[in-house]
Amino acid sequence: MRIQVTRTGGLAAPLCVLLDTEGRPDAPHIHAVVREALGACGSAQVPFPRPDAFHYEIRVDERPVGHCAEPNLTGSQRELVALVLGQVGAF
Image (tube, rainbow, N blue to C red; front, side, top):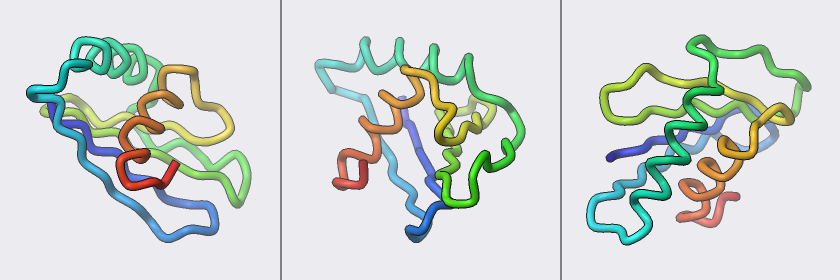
């Protein structure tokens, strides 16, 4: 599974990070988090609740793009964003 998270908004420059779960021992857990996170995402870009809030676009393989924004992330969305962006120390 290839997971791409793009972060925009806030005071930082846009950031796009890709995570490939192939061969990872924690892949089953990540796949479960992805299913839950995408289930709670909207299919259209959500309005920014605050001018300095981050917006996240989540792309997973061929699935529809999911959109979510701070501070309204669910626990699974926050975990997924932290996992992917944490690879580059951005979360």
